[in-house]
Image (tube, rainbow, N blue to C red):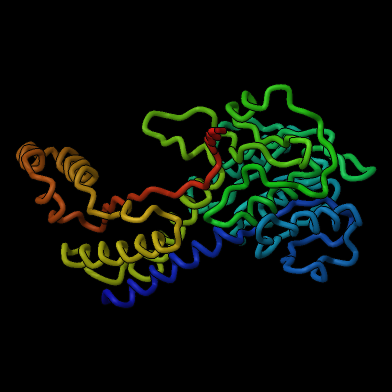
Length: 361
């Protein structure tokens, strides 16, 4: 496959990633005695008429979004006695950004759903779950901690309102953050005793500033960074961007390039050029900082692969040869069917922390 076609495909993938980050997709698992199955909801008229009023209202809340509306809401309706796994598995063929469980989800079910999401995210899955009181310490799980959410005469729990939050996150554009996203319909909420400590612990909370009830800092449940992990993994916005960049880059290459040409150095260079176009397009969409991105053949990963091959074969002479190779020499080595790429770029954050000094004279 020639360079122009692959470059075009990756540029298109970059535009698709940017569009989806700006208007994402919500998935809901709901329990109902009727209308069991999976539905794609793009407008209120798509909501099954036989669905219970409480569940229909939950779908409408998810559709409200924030700056934008979600591009779609996938609804998996399970029976009153069905387990949470049934609802999750029914959504397996769908790609979505934020998932919320049933309105009556228990703590045990929330933990189980978190485990399902974490396991799937090790693959191509980009979904993140908004779950009540679930301290998973993971970037794929949003620990929504709120109580006494009041709308007129009605009071909602975090479980009942998680779908609304999923819609807010899906409706947050790439150049914005859901931090301090106002919920105009909410008239009151139980105050969090120490908001800063809650945020540091990876809790997504609601705060009442006297004018609006709004989200606190838009963080996920990840409170502990492993060695080498960047702090951006704690922010919902940043994780969403990284997820979709990775997803569209990998799947486009698999669909358009994998198995279609010899693994020569020249063809690897063609792939590098195409990925540079992909990253440049993301910079142009203000998802990556201008001038921050790049791609190269991963010399370190190549060395490790070649050393593993030589060690497995018990070839001490080959081990010494590989150890002596320069990075540039490594990039030209035969790596069988493997291609080791290193992509980098700085994901742009949104304005959240303001430091304003007023000098009165």
